[in-house]
Length: 368
Length: 153
Image 1: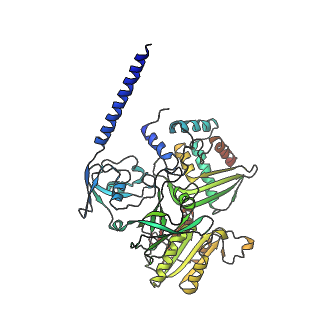
Image 2: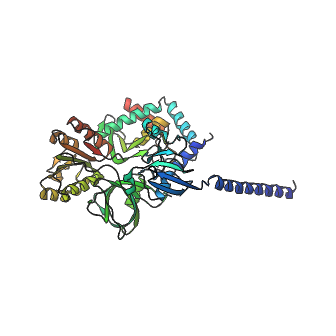
């Protein structure tokens, strides 16, 4: 075959594919250009003009309206629900598994899955407008146990945060290693709600965890980190005489904040805090809670060690936290329970609490 | 086997660093359909279904839970289930949110160990997905099939 024919053929193919690429990229820009869209929030109470084309979750975040989310918009957590009365289009298959029949009937959607393509009417709970974003400086990273670190972060100069003890923040990582994009996860605040210029989180290393690996292996003191919050409805109700608090591992975080809130506000509630751990090495904040117990007779700290070693000289409760709870809490009358820990611990404790007369209305815990 | 657009999107979310640090696929460049089909064929050849596997793994995990983080005697196995706060969404986006738990089985006789998460149980039981070759959380179907035999035997 003539070499020039081969060259011409190859050249033609290159030109055709090049032209097709240009047409596709122009078409993409034209077709995906949704222009300016109006977001009517809460029946005209807030009107936003936004550039269409992104997910509703990220569009709202760009307008400083932060909806809770634990998976970073990948449709695996189902937390970023929002009511969209108009403009969302048909329900997507990726949303279906997360929505109850009632939610579908009320036009609730997953904001990470629907794209802003035209004007929309939304209903967003008022309390979410208080959620803000902060770029904080990591002031200290402290090893509390072999797998739990405490991050103490200072808010930018002049900025303050108001939160209810028990609420959580979303912590954003930067890309690292093979993690090419930002990741965010929810962590309960462990610091006092009276402290307005700092936020503390307790973060336990989860094997393979995107965010906890970042905190435990990449993050350094002095680094800047992004937080948003406060989120959540796990906070003190206090319509009772006594608070039964139960935690394990890093679940101690919101309970610590709650204990300080009751004390600092001078609330009259008695408090009993059952803290479950397997070994001595899993216990932390022991001195601090012992000191609070000494200073405030309304507070009792009950650490429960499931498997103390002989040399530990452990004199506290031995056994699972569920045993101590069962033995020491007689009835749910005039009590509220606040729990934070692993799903298995929560399930086991809730089961016991219900046998004592606690109800869904008097048991509080975070579901993330 | 040709991958459909939905599976192509799922594959994108399963690479390392997207949903979990190490991803679900390892070095495997086969389509999801091919990965699942090959592993289920191995199971079928051993006369075990993905549901049987899931049930056996869940039973062992539940046994491990009773130890609250310590080893528990489960016949031929020593079982240890460790829990973490929070849940993990299924990468197939079916609405399932697995508890963050890892269960480790140690064969009393040989000392051989296998570790699986609650998400592994769900992925195998519902999706026939044992993860791609090279993924740290991949479980070999023939090893798991043997596990079922040991559990039931």
